[in-house]
Image (cartoon, rainbow, N blue to C red):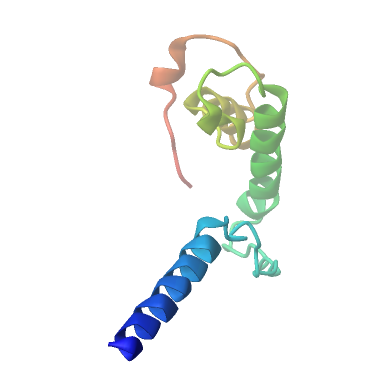
Length: 111
């Protein structure tokens, strides 16, 4: 009977220790990845190869300039359809920037 009482006391102490450790927040915000080098764009189309980095830079600039404008926090890091369409028109089509509402009618053409 005495061993049963000691075993239950040890088990209880162990459970209290485990639950107190598990109750503390774990440090899950650490990142153990590293940046990788991007491969060079080589599609065979020299114009496209030179304009794609400009296109992505344009999108980054549009996202940065619109921070705080959108209600949804998702768009603080991701572009809206309007931002992508305007960068596509500016960089890949060579059109002047516009603020029109006709973004639904932008035609995407490939070469």
